[in-house]
Length: 137
Image 1 (cartoon, rainbow, N blue to C red):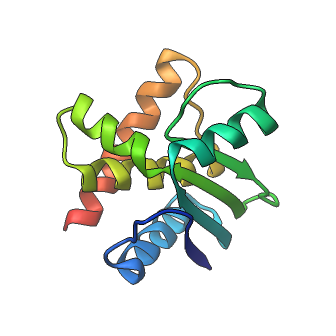
Image 2 (cartoon, rainbow, N blue to C red):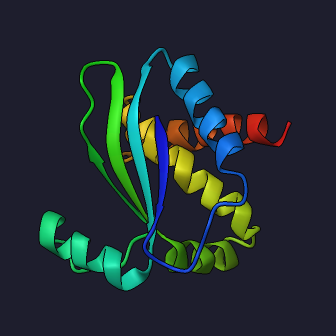
């Protein structure tokens, strides 16, 4: 199951459509749907988690906690709506597109994709683009 939770004044427009898209992505990647919780929050909320759990004193757009069991996808994905808004402006893209990119980015990590090296980041970006194109069809 895909769950959407809100710790800030924001809501996903069509939760069912997004949940189905996320599930389809998980299946296409050869994984099995488990329980994924999306928690939408503000910078302050996410910064606190970043310091407390990752010892990073920086702002970020997304933090994910992976509880996967083999290929069965489980986890909590925290997204700062404020950071995504700022990033959309910086990248000159629509907020909706950027929030969808961050949403699928977290799941792709659970499916085994990394983004620490340039080549891994390039593959992650191409996977994001591939699945974003499927959402807009």
